[in-house]
Each structure stands twice: as C-alpha cells, then as structure tokens.
Image (tube, rainbow, N blue to C red; front, side, top):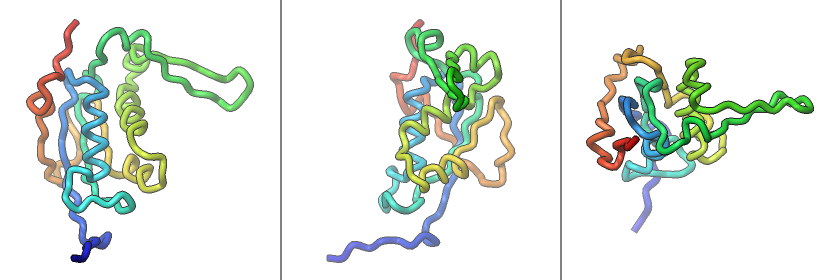
Length: 155
C-alpha cells in the first residue's frame, strides 16, 4: 500500500458562510478552526493549506455564556513599562470591535505557525453586518444553530 500526498496546487478551496447571530463564541471558534485546518476533509495534511475559507457575518450579535461578558478580560501591552491595558467583551462590542472577539478565539485554537497565520489572514473574513463582498466565491451557507443544538443561550 502507498500513501498518496496531494500537491499544493491539487487542493480546491471552498468558501463557507456562517451567520454568527446568537451563537456562542467558543463553539463557533472550535468549528471554524476545524474548517480552516482542513480536518473535515479526507486528504488532511498538517503541513499543507488544505482547509477552506470561512466568511462570518453578524459578528456584532455573538453571545458569551455565563458572566463572560463582564468577567472575561482581554489584555494588550504597548511594550513600555506599565503599558498593559485590559478590556472586556462588553467594552469591545461598544467600540465596534466584535470581530476581534471571534478572531482571537479562533487564533487561540490554531497552532502558532506561519501556515496558520497565513490562514487567519487570507481564509477568514469577519463582518459586523449581514452583507459581505464575497458573493463571487459562491459560499455555501452553514446553519450553525441546526448543526449544534446545545448552542442555545440560557440567561
């Protein structure tokens, strides 16, 4: 038996459209990281970009479970002494940076290698509203709420 490894130019990149309205951030990020890596395909290879592209719309309507909206902290540092800043998801949503919430969750679920930094940059598109400029890619819509019934948020 021989194992066949496909070349980089033999992969076909498909695009998927996901509506993030009323979806939990962690559940969404774990599913998207699998699609970006290509682990849902039979010819997965960890050193080749076999994954598909993902377009996320309505990123401003995502949900966190529990009290994560006020308790979870995101840190950034300017590089200077005393330059650490912290924000919460509520503050980021008020500043219209809800796409950062999704991108940081997905980035945390991918390996920190040049290949996956390239995937985050070129294969992940996040938009706040219902519209996106990627109609020419003919994305297939994934209904995430039907895919994962545990996704309901209980307040």
